[in-house]
Image 1 (cartoon, rainbow, N blue to C red):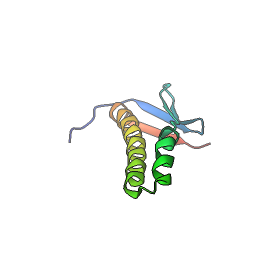
Image 2: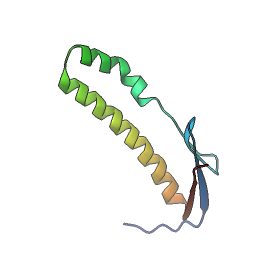
Image 3: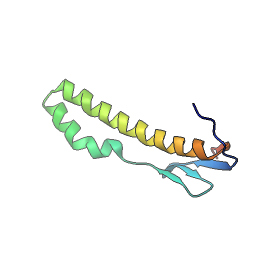
Image 4: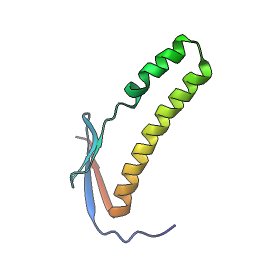
Length: 87
């Protein structure tokens, strides 16, 4: 694992409309991962296709985790100090 040489600091504000907003203007928007797949999920549930329902839920989960991972990795690589505020 390589060491970071970042010396910058960043503050993160958590919210509802945007999941996280950084002090430098970077935002993690609240995407509608579930809403995008809702039609396919309803179709699979009505057909009682349990394997397809599992696959769709897994896809939603993986897309959400991937987005969060990319956002946090970008922040961690470029900043030595990260401060998170909730209120």
